[in-house]
Every structure is written in C-alpha cells, then in structure tokens.
Length: 170
Image 1 (cartoon, rainbow, N blue to C red):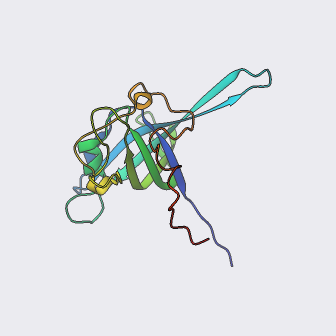
Image 2: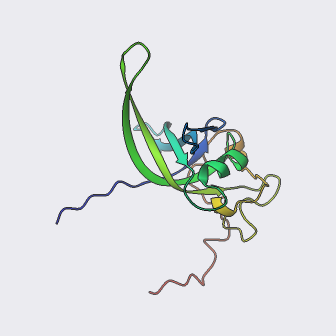
Image 3: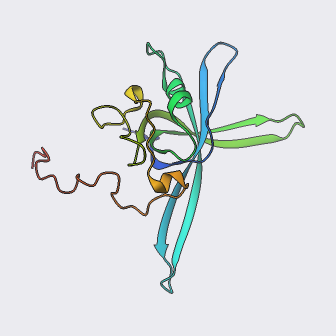
C-alpha cells in the first residue's frame, strides 16, 4: 500500500503585517511571512544562526462565525509568535511580462497564537491560545516583539516542565 504525507509544523514569528483580501467569489484569504530561526555552534565554537522565511496562506473555511483569515485580520500582527500546521504547496503562474514565476507556500489548516508576558495573558481565557477562540489582548514575549526567535528554551511555558501529573498512560 502506498501512502504519502504532506504536513508542516512551524513555530515562528510573523515577519510582516498580514495581508487580508477577498477573492472575486467572496472567499477571504490571509497571507504573511513566518520566520523560523535555528542556532548552533560552529566548528570553532562560535554561535551561528540561520533564519528561514515561510509564506503562509490561510483561507476562511465553511465554519459559522468566520475562519482563520478573519482571526488573522483581527489578532495577528508583525512580531507575534505563532504555531502553524498545514501542508506545503508549490504554485506557478505567468507574470505581466510573460515570465513563469514559482512560489512555495504553507497552506495553513491550524494556527495557535503563542503569547508571552507583555501586557497580559495571551490566547483564550483557559490559556490555550487557540486561534478560533483567541482573546483580543495580544501578548508578545520580548523576543517576539523584537523579531528575534528564542533559542529553544521554554520561557513561554515555565510551569510545563515542573508538572508531575501529566496524564501519560505509561
């Protein structure tokens, strides 16, 4: 049996103010760039860093009360930290001069807003931060506010590692 999987999971910082527009048939679509950064020590022990940019596209679904594009328009801004889940999509088109252009996009199906400690609690009242029930308060960690990604530490979830009642079945 042949199976395949096209799944992307990213945590990063929004690199530009999202652009939200309507298509001719009335569907709404949001686009923004998400930066993911990795750091490592080079052969001589010096710190090295590489940032990758991902073009994210979110469409409104058929759900009542709006969709992801509406949530992005209201609550997502440059510098915010997000968890994105979706699939990679490659497209090509002809520009005005007749040149073939190519793009790689992340077609987002799930989004979770991750917040820090600046200006209030991020996410919903339960602390989950799910996009469909996101609270209007936008909280950004200092790293997200400056556009820098944190180095993999758990500053957004300080109590998560200390909780011994984790409900794991083993």
